[in-house]
Image (cartoon, rainbow, N blue to C red; front, side, top):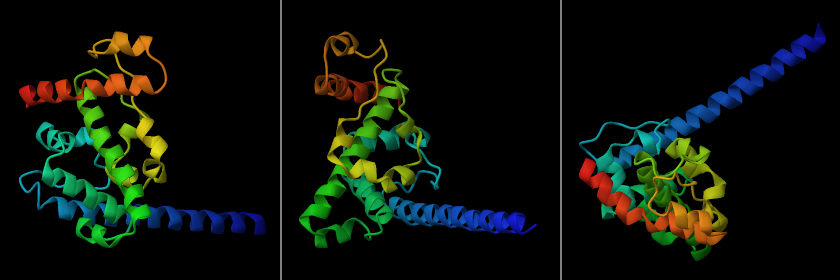
Length: 191
Protein backbone atom coordinates (compact mmCIF):
# COMPACT_ATOMS: atom_id res chain seq x y z
CA UNK A 1 0.00 0.00 0.00
CA UNK A 2 2.85 2.39 0.87
CA UNK A 3 4.48 1.74 -2.52
CA UNK A 4 1.24 2.65 -4.36
CA UNK A 5 0.91 5.88 -2.37
CA UNK A 6 4.50 6.84 -3.22
CA UNK A 7 3.82 6.16 -6.92
CA UNK A 8 0.64 8.28 -6.79
CA UNK A 9 2.61 11.16 -5.24
CA UNK A 10 5.27 10.97 -7.98
CA UNK A 11 2.55 10.89 -10.63
CA UNK A 12 0.92 13.93 -9.04
CA UNK A 13 4.23 15.81 -9.10
CA UNK A 14 4.76 14.90 -12.77
CA UNK A 15 1.26 16.14 -13.60
CA UNK A 16 2.02 19.47 -11.93
CA UNK A 17 5.34 19.83 -13.79
CA UNK A 18 3.65 19.10 -17.12
CA UNK A 19 0.87 21.55 -16.30
CA UNK A 20 3.42 24.26 -15.41
CA UNK A 21 5.28 23.69 -18.68
CA UNK A 22 2.01 24.00 -20.67
CA UNK A 23 1.13 27.14 -18.74
CA UNK A 24 4.60 28.60 -19.41
CA UNK A 25 4.35 27.89 -23.16
CA UNK A 26 0.86 29.41 -23.27
CA UNK A 27 2.12 32.51 -21.42
CA UNK A 28 5.12 32.91 -23.75
CA UNK A 29 2.92 32.47 -26.83
CA UNK A 30 0.42 35.01 -25.55
CA UNK A 31 3.13 37.57 -24.90
CA UNK A 32 5.00 37.01 -28.18
CA UNK A 33 1.94 36.90 -30.40
CA UNK A 34 0.47 39.96 -28.67
CA UNK A 35 3.54 41.78 -30.00
CA UNK A 36 2.94 40.27 -33.45
CA UNK A 37 -0.46 41.97 -33.64
CA UNK A 38 1.38 45.28 -34.16
CA UNK A 39 2.66 43.94 -37.48
CA UNK A 40 -0.06 41.49 -38.50
CA UNK A 41 -3.25 43.10 -37.20
CA UNK A 42 -5.45 41.71 -39.98
CA UNK A 43 -4.46 38.09 -39.30
CA UNK A 44 -6.03 35.67 -36.83
CA UNK A 45 -4.71 35.13 -33.36
CA UNK A 46 -1.97 32.59 -32.87
CA UNK A 47 -1.36 30.35 -29.85
CA UNK A 48 1.22 27.99 -28.34
CA UNK A 49 0.41 25.34 -30.96
CA UNK A 50 0.93 27.57 -34.03
CA UNK A 51 3.43 26.11 -36.49
CA UNK A 52 4.95 27.52 -39.69
CA UNK A 53 2.49 25.52 -41.75
CA UNK A 54 -0.43 27.18 -39.90
CA UNK A 55 0.52 30.66 -41.15
CA UNK A 56 -1.14 32.09 -44.23
CA UNK A 57 0.87 32.41 -47.45
CA UNK A 58 1.04 36.21 -47.07
CA UNK A 59 2.39 36.10 -43.49
CA UNK A 60 4.85 33.33 -44.33
CA UNK A 61 6.10 35.28 -47.35
CA UNK A 62 6.77 38.29 -45.14
CA UNK A 63 8.93 36.15 -42.82
CA UNK A 64 10.73 34.33 -45.63
CA UNK A 65 11.49 37.50 -47.60
CA UNK A 66 12.79 39.27 -44.48
CA UNK A 67 10.17 42.02 -44.49
CA UNK A 68 11.12 44.60 -41.83
CA UNK A 69 8.03 43.99 -39.69
CA UNK A 70 8.51 40.24 -39.90
CA UNK A 71 12.16 40.56 -38.86
CA UNK A 72 11.10 42.50 -35.81
CA UNK A 73 8.26 40.06 -35.03
CA UNK A 74 10.63 37.10 -35.27
CA UNK A 75 13.13 38.78 -32.97
CA UNK A 76 10.27 39.59 -30.56
CA UNK A 77 9.38 35.87 -30.49
CA UNK A 78 12.98 34.93 -29.76
CA UNK A 79 13.45 37.55 -27.06
CA UNK A 80 10.19 36.62 -25.33
CA UNK A 81 10.87 32.88 -25.46
CA UNK A 82 14.37 33.42 -24.09
CA UNK A 83 12.79 35.60 -21.39
CA UNK A 84 14.90 38.62 -22.37
CA UNK A 85 12.08 41.09 -23.04
CA UNK A 86 11.30 42.00 -26.65
CA UNK A 87 13.15 43.25 -29.74
CA UNK A 88 13.69 46.75 -28.34
CA UNK A 89 15.55 45.26 -25.36
CA UNK A 90 18.10 43.57 -27.65
CA UNK A 91 20.24 46.71 -27.75
CA UNK A 92 21.29 46.20 -24.13
CA UNK A 93 22.53 42.61 -24.59
CA UNK A 94 26.18 41.62 -24.71
CA UNK A 95 27.75 40.58 -28.02
CA UNK A 96 27.92 36.85 -27.19
CA UNK A 97 24.22 36.70 -26.32
CA UNK A 98 23.30 38.71 -29.44
CA UNK A 99 25.30 36.33 -31.66
CA UNK A 100 23.52 33.36 -30.12
CA UNK A 101 20.13 35.02 -30.64
CA UNK A 102 20.97 35.85 -34.25
CA UNK A 103 21.77 32.17 -34.85
CA UNK A 104 18.23 31.44 -33.66
CA UNK A 105 16.82 34.24 -35.80
CA UNK A 106 18.52 32.95 -38.96
CA UNK A 107 17.46 29.41 -38.13
CA UNK A 108 13.80 30.43 -37.79
CA UNK A 109 13.91 32.56 -40.93
CA UNK A 110 15.39 29.59 -42.79
CA UNK A 111 12.54 27.43 -41.43
CA UNK A 112 10.04 29.90 -42.92
CA UNK A 113 11.81 29.66 -46.28
CA UNK A 114 11.83 25.86 -46.08
CA UNK A 115 8.11 25.90 -45.26
CA UNK A 116 7.52 27.72 -48.54
CA UNK A 117 9.45 25.03 -50.40
CA UNK A 118 7.48 22.37 -48.49
CA UNK A 119 4.19 23.99 -49.61
CA UNK A 120 5.45 23.74 -53.19
CA UNK A 121 6.35 20.04 -52.59
CA UNK A 122 10.03 20.81 -53.19
CA UNK A 123 11.31 19.60 -49.80
CA UNK A 124 10.23 17.23 -47.05
CA UNK A 125 9.11 18.70 -43.77
CA UNK A 126 11.64 17.84 -41.08
CA UNK A 127 10.39 16.87 -37.61
CA UNK A 128 11.56 20.28 -36.34
CA UNK A 129 9.42 22.04 -38.97
CA UNK A 130 6.38 20.35 -37.44
CA UNK A 131 7.05 21.88 -34.00
CA UNK A 132 5.11 24.89 -32.74
CA UNK A 133 6.93 28.21 -33.18
CA UNK A 134 7.12 28.77 -29.42
CA UNK A 135 8.75 25.36 -28.93
CA UNK A 136 11.27 26.13 -31.68
CA UNK A 137 12.13 29.51 -30.17
CA UNK A 138 12.65 27.82 -26.77
CA UNK A 139 14.78 24.98 -28.20
CA UNK A 140 18.46 25.53 -27.26
CA UNK A 141 19.59 23.70 -30.44
CA UNK A 142 18.50 26.51 -32.78
CA UNK A 143 20.89 28.94 -31.08
CA UNK A 144 23.93 26.80 -31.93
CA UNK A 145 25.85 27.54 -35.12
CA UNK A 146 25.56 23.91 -36.29
CA UNK A 147 21.77 24.31 -36.42
CA UNK A 148 22.18 26.59 -39.42
CA UNK A 149 23.47 23.61 -41.42
CA UNK A 150 20.18 21.75 -40.97
CA UNK A 151 18.19 21.61 -44.20
CA UNK A 152 15.30 19.36 -45.24
CA UNK A 153 15.85 16.82 -47.99
CA UNK A 154 14.50 17.85 -51.40
CA UNK A 155 11.93 16.01 -53.48
CA UNK A 156 12.54 15.39 -57.20
CA UNK A 157 10.32 18.41 -57.94
CA UNK A 158 12.96 20.74 -56.37
CA UNK A 159 14.74 22.72 -59.15
CA UNK A 160 18.17 21.66 -57.85
CA UNK A 161 17.32 18.05 -57.07
CA UNK A 162 19.83 16.48 -59.51
CA UNK A 163 22.60 18.83 -58.38
CA UNK A 164 21.72 17.93 -54.75
CA UNK A 165 22.12 14.22 -55.51
CA UNK A 166 25.59 14.81 -57.00
CA UNK A 167 26.77 17.08 -54.17
CA UNK A 168 28.03 16.24 -50.69
CA UNK A 169 28.25 17.78 -47.23
CA UNK A 170 27.60 21.49 -46.88
CA UNK A 171 27.16 21.85 -50.65
CA UNK A 172 23.80 20.11 -50.32
CA UNK A 173 22.42 22.84 -48.07
CA UNK A 174 23.62 25.47 -50.55
CA UNK A 175 21.90 23.70 -53.45
CA UNK A 176 18.59 23.48 -51.58
CA UNK A 177 18.77 27.13 -50.47
CA UNK A 178 19.65 28.42 -53.95
CA UNK A 179 16.01 27.84 -54.93
CA UNK A 180 14.58 30.07 -52.16
CA UNK A 181 14.15 33.11 -54.43
CA UNK A 182 12.37 31.00 -57.03
CA UNK A 183 10.15 29.45 -54.32
CA UNK A 184 9.19 32.91 -53.04
CA UNK A 185 8.15 33.95 -56.56
CA UNK A 186 6.07 30.78 -57.00
CA UNK A 187 4.25 31.20 -53.69
CA UNK A 188 3.62 34.93 -54.34
CA UNK A 189 1.95 33.95 -57.60
CA UNK A 190 -0.26 31.51 -55.66
CA UNK A 191 -1.12 33.99 -52.84
